[in-house]
Image 1 (spheres, rainbow, N blue to C red):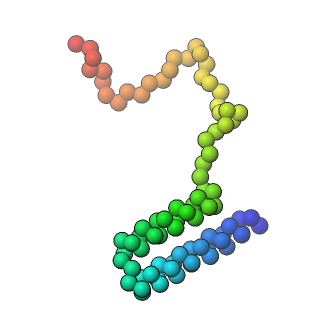
Image 2: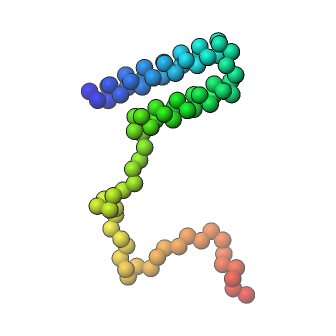
Length: 83
């Protein structure tokens, strides 16, 4: 049921933003300003719906590597410090 309500809300917001964009275009708003408004509204909607990741808490972090295991390194170029 929650997924159904979220989809309904997403559709309502989508059509509301689309209608606002059409009205602003008809009213003569410049396209650059219209794009700025659309990006801002999209960001606000994303923040409002909570579509973000939270950092892991110390209780859910993966265990540390075994102290006897050497650290892995990822070199993309040969070492040039040697003569």
